[in-house]
Structure formats: C-alpha cells, structure tokens
Length: 328
Ligand SMILES: *Cc1c(COP(=O)(O)O)cnc(C)c1O
Image (cartoon, rainbow, N blue to C red; front, side, top):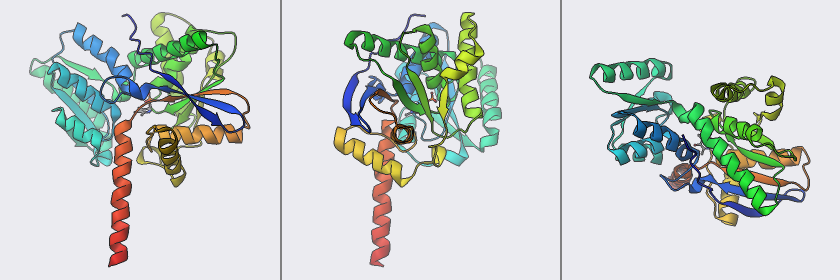
C-alpha cells in the first residue's frame, strides 16, 4: 500500500519557557471531517474498505469520539451503513455525536463491560444476514493506524531537511497509543544523527500499562515487517508521561482551561480539554519541571476541534446556571 501524505503545515508559534522555540504541526488541518489524527488513520482503513468488497462498517467509541465521527463521515461518503457501539458511561450529548447521527450512523450504547460482546454479536448478526462488515478498532488502533503516524514522522523529517531546523523534542497527546507508536517507529525507520525525543503526554492511562500498550503496538508493527528491534532500544525511545492526566477522558482542570483560552486568544488555535489542551499543558509543565532550555520543540496538534465547541458551549451553560442561581 502506498503512503498517504498530507504534509500538514508546521508553523512557527513562539518562544516558550527558557528560550525554547515552539513549532506546531497542524494535523487538525487534515482536509477531511475537521481533520485530526483519526482522519489521518481513517484514510488507511478506508483504502482497505475500498479495495475489498465490504458493505458496512462497525466500530466503537464514546459519544465524544473523534474517531467515530471521522469513520461515520467516511462511511456516509461511500453510502455504507455504519454501526457504532459505545459505552453508556460516556454517552453525553456532544457535537461529535450529533455529527455521527447526522451522517446516519446507527449508534448503540451498552454498559462498558458489555461493549466487547456487543461488538462480537453485531458482527455475527451482520454476517448471518449475508453482510460483509469491515471492523475498525476504537481510536483506529492497529498497524494501519501506526502506519499513518509513521507518515507523519516522515513529513517532520522532510521539513527538517528542507529548513535545517532540528526538533529536539516532539510532544503530543497519547491515548490509545497508535499515534505514539507510529512516531517511535518513524524514529527507527528514518534515523538521523541528532536525537529527537518523542514524548507522549498520557491523557488517561497510567504507567506501566499505558506505556506497554505503545510498546506492544511498536512490536506488532515491526513484526509485520519481519524486523526485529532491540527491546531496550525501543523502551528507551518510548517516553510516556502519565503525570498530567487530570480526570482522564472526563476532562481537565482549570489550569488546562486557562491554556485553551490562552492558545486560542494568542495564536487563534483551538485546543480541547481531553486531548490537545491537556497535552499542551503537560508540555509546558514538563519543560519547566525539567528545566529545558534553548531547544526546538514541536507540538503535534492531533485535532479534536468539535470538542473545543463542546467546551465552549459547556462553559457558557455553566455560566448561565451560576447567574440563574444568583438571581434566585
Ligand atoms: C484519539 C486522539 C488522540 C490520541 O491518539 P491515540 O492514537 O489514540 O493515542 C489525541 N488527540 C486527539 C484529538 C484524539 O482524538
């Protein structure tokens, strides 16, 4: 399969902290369905859909899932039925959910511990009807998702070659781990003289499991190529920071809200409270805590723009509720 190259812009943002220089790779500007890392990954999954004789799509994720929104959009584009299974525990109304419904996806929620069996049952039922479903794991997890972020890394290397700028550190939000795995694989596939540290800011998972999932994905990808890497080498290259997770997928602290407001007012770039805002906050804290100086820093904006609007709307509703109480 040939690669999908987007070459999303890398923009020069500002000086941050102690003489560090911040750049941002705008994967939120991938030109499909509000972009983001799920749009980058979905491109590969839907190439497989187009190459096969699939007639419907099955995936899973919460009501705020960027992955499910992009998949529902890709399915609608092809006129394919799309079935989305989600956990009841994370089914609040969101813009992503509105979009999924608008695209005609059929969403069903079950208690989180029944998600796995419900997916199996749905696939069974569709096959029993003579259908040929294409299944995509939550978050676009798997080798194709990893592959998508190897592409991203190669775009970064290309930019470095063209400009002579070397990135000392790359930060981004790490969730299900394939974005992270792809970047680390890229580092091995496109080696350079000067090191680049790839630092995933965990949005929910804790170590050691969070890091292990990334390591497993890296191994799975290289196994598929028939390449064996030194375990120690891979472990060293996989930096998974779990100290800024806040409330995980449920949201974030006031400090993160301050970051979101500041980045939007100063640079006009929307972040969200689950992924990119938290990762940006984690990056700033890390640079300060580790006393990083004089480095070139790249932040990968992994998308999630509809979540920015959820936050904006939620903040407005909370404000109105407060005012209402004050008047009573
Ligand atoms: C899913 C997501 C992530 C995390 O990506 P993973 O590949 O699941 O680790 C980061 N940012 C945004 C906006 C996302 O939607």
